[in-house]
Image (cartoon, rainbow, N blue to C red):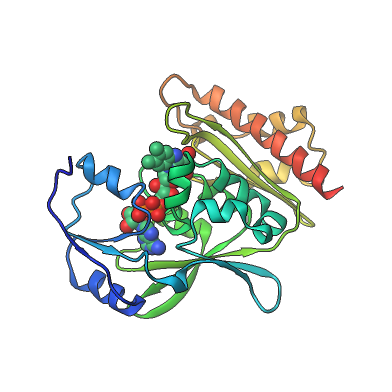
Length: 276
Ligand SMILES: Cc1cc2nc3c(=O)[nH]c(=O)nc-3n(C[C@H](O)[C@H](O)[C@H](O)COP(=O)(O)OP(=O)(O)OC[C@H]3O[C@@H](n4cnc5c(N)ncnc54)[C@H](O)[C@@H]3O)c2cc1C
């Protein structure tokens, strides 16, 4: 049962969608509905108007920018399409793996990149991969288009009245990986880590175990130059403050810190093997 009453509209273009968001109190973007509709059912969202953007075809699909450095992933690209896209598998494998790990086939067929990045409340899989990739989000608002580092977007949340139009991801080749320990019932991450090995050292991000998706720069510095053997990675995680890890149901900060270390070691070792 949906607990609140709301209106529904399908704007023909992005400008119309933005005008509706700006002009209506309680307006929400509706993409795949895999977070928003359960929230409405649970009474956890008091939306007054759903602005359905699924027909905006220009927000769908992945291309490489003309200079070859970035993948531009449209916000309405489904998680299933992202997981199977040969370009993403080749140049941003941590993103493809994060999408593949998401929920079940129905969630992946309907859920979108923009919705997974913008969904608040529970830890989702794509933000951590976006942080490790040093990606940026492209936003459209009443003042035009802007880009924001994914790290800032993850810290501040989706700005009101704006529509996430694309994720901009540096092309990395195979030197990246994603690992997750999933809640058995929901498949959401208890802890997920994403890594990229770059000429400047590893980039490491964690979610689920931490209050929000975070780059762990202290761990990155301790591991810069390698090696990525499990003992070294676990030692690098033990040096982090315990308060970084937020105990949940049946978990302690020590357990989550250890789990994050184990998953990161696996991810770094897989990325290093792919690079060799
Ligand atoms: C059974 C189940 C299992 C799941 N398991 C997982 C899991 O393992 N891992 C995981 O990460 N997630 C999981 N999810 C969540 C799911 O992946 C996300 O809900 C989905 O990706 C969100 O995308 P959507 O297109 O459905 O967004 P919607 O539900 O339509 O929207 C979600 C939120 O984002 C906003 N939004 C959507 N698109 C945009 C946009 N382009 N610009 C601005 N704001 C926008 C909406 O207003 C809303 O607030 C699960 C969900 C279900 C129902």
